[in-house]
Length: 407
Image 1 (cartoon, one colour):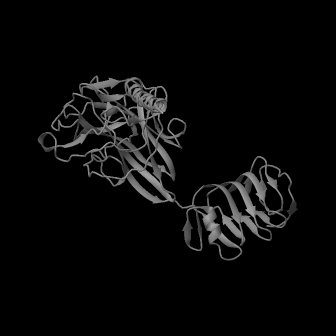
Image 2: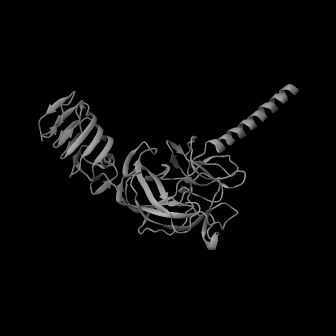
Image 3: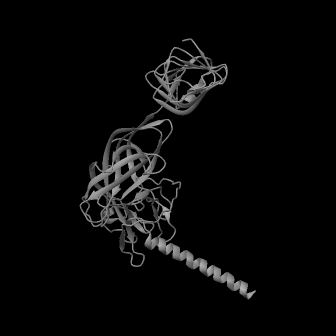
């Protein structure tokens, strides 16, 4: 019995030591590049190496701060939450107090280290982005901004660094304006510290049009001082919590996490930024005077055979299914790309004009009809039913089924 108790104690002790050791190694040897407190003396420590990855995602409840902006125009997307002690700073300024062990994360042109965070354009919307506002500081600056360089690109996809670039690059200085944000980054209880004034800087994107999807803002800054620049993390409240889904590139991409003040409990942090612009409807097709987000939605809204659907933009969808009613699709100056068309038996899809590009198969079964009066393209079309019309096909159709004349 005594041996069993001692074994349990030994196992518990080993687990505790191992846990502390792992946390210490993570905190001391594998940091994200940034501006950190010294665990022993609470002095800033600068790290330019990053080798440790931890991927998180979390839902963030907004605690918005109405910050005055240098940009005119409506706010389209705001995740610039930084202030957690309004008016508590030097001269009554707002402060952004650290809730963990980091003042900010490196975002530096000279070090080729950059940050990224995401935003999502909802389905059915087209965002016209006029400008983007970002936040940085250089330790030891005055309230006159030392930021003199801003590199920014926007990519589209699930993660940064592996996506299509839809705007910008990381070689061009796109800085438009920069000034003091009115916020100091501090470590409690020194609320009146002034050595980390946060600057806001803008990049003009000139009505960049982004349809529905997930996008990443990748950016880095340059300045006239030796430190940083650093970007403070989104700061929601006064406790150590998840605030977003930021990544840092320093030779490779890594999820940005921050430890608590004791060097444990790493949590993902977000990057503050503001998008300015407008949102307009991004609709695909119209039928019976109503507009729909997708071509399939318009097809589903048809209530009798032969109703005409008009495209409102270049449509690119995975597949459409025609039925229980036949439909006529009018390009009206726009083209359509579909991977697959499914046409119910006894029904037809009549393509009137412009180009319908099919990247996969036409599944019109035995008596379903693809009625082409425009141009249909595709590298290896496979068909199982009936095709008719006076339009053209860019390539022969495999398994053509029944070809019938008609217009």
